Image 1 (cartoon, chains in turn cyan, green):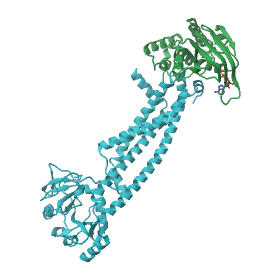
Image 2 (cartoon, chains in turn orange, purple):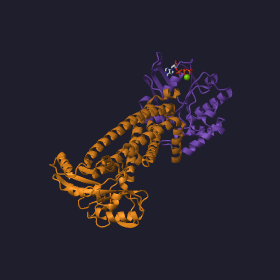
Image 3 (cartoon, rainbow over the protein chains, first blue to last red):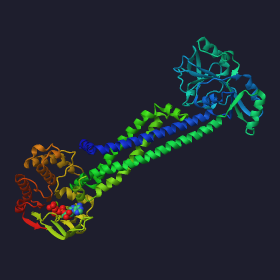
Length: 400
Length: 212
Ligand SMILES: Nc1ncnc2c1ncn2[C@@H]1O[C@H](COP(=O)(O)OP(=O)(O)OP(=O)(O)O)[C@@H](O)[C@H]1O
Ligand SMILES: [Mg+2]
């Protein structure tokens, strides 16, 4: 009999097909919106968390005029190059009030044989580094020696090495995912620079005069002593190296980014609540229309001896089937949009965006399926109770 | 034995009291016809007696059970097994064919003998001359054919009392006679019939006529 019972359920649903379809659509849209907003929220938060890790210095000195380029590089990983003389680092690092400092060199991104897209090559100083280190995904021995590299998260590593300009470089660590172009960066020790540049040139990469000559750095990252005055330190830097630099404040960028984040999640929340509220009103409407349409049918069944309890159970299972399929389809549908376009969404918000892992997405989906099904059942229960409690004779006579 | 005491009923939003302190007793084995002009409350008293319309006051007892004091479960049992009700209008579940309409309402709960019910329904459709219509949908049937299907549905579980609201109204003489014969046969098998009617044939067949 169970097969027949299942059939009946679908027949009953089909007999009020239009409103049930509306109900399904409402549940589908509600779930899709909830899923998308949950995933977007999660992704922005993870993106932010990871971003924080690499905006870990108080100030960053860059050549004059390169401020915006440097900020773009920090936030979005856009490929930029700017240089000043390497001697600047020596002069600056000994200034009073500076707790730690390190320098980096950005080589303009080059197409390399390892990777489908161009890679950004960064040289840093493992001795003094406090910027790259905290951002590494797993533990590594801090001494990056010889031609070893650390790679961005989306660079594919084969057998523990990457191939660049015909050379093989052993990979010792991988960066945490950022959701930006920085994921396709490669980090070398400073010492390797002449070597890498030579190989790059051999392979016909276009390099600037400065890059070929060496003796350059792109930026100096500085952390101040807690008691040091920022203005005073900058004043001294100015006196020491002259008016040839701009200052970027990574930690401030971080703060303003966090501000953006809460503004964006605020907007996402408002949209979610507003649409969610509207859709719940629609749920109520469609549940009421469906049950109104079933009034006579329910009355007839009661007159023929079906108990209220059985009827309530049958009606609830119909609502349950619709709700469950609607919310599952809605989440899957939402996945199809949110996942492939994650990077695009992040770009639109101009925020780091890191999509959730498969397991986390599944968990989110499960929670939404349960939540939406519960809401749908709850909004239907009032109408189900009503329709099973009206006087059968009165309901029977009234054709809806 | 069905007993109604001091039944009063006024519909909500209606100025008129349809039933006022009505007393009625239906004895076992009777065929009682209720007559009265249109609007006199025949359908109303039938519904009250069938346990599907709560009166404002008074009580209805089947044997010793006060219908309107029973739990939903017990009243449902009575509707399934003891009182068959045929409404004035032919009402079906439009998503099911005729045979399913007759049998399915009884298939949930403790009714396990599905096969037997289907067979019984087919046999009765045959008896009433609509055996070949079993797999049609309600809207495909004429009014007379629908009425017969409703009658079979009400009688399927062999209830001891059958309450019919105008079983022959609007039907041709031949069909009316078929239905009447069917009801009379049923009564002769030891059951009780109560029918509201304007039809002289029904009155002639009845063992008692009650003018409301
Ligand atoms: N749901 C209702 N709400 C208000 N008044 C109603 C309702 N149903 C019936 N009535 C009124 O109650 C009175 C009795 O109705 P009922 O249907 O019992 O009459 P009847 O004797 O069966 O008539 P007929 O022979 O036309 O079927 C009528 O005056 C009718 O207008
Ligand atoms: Mg009537």
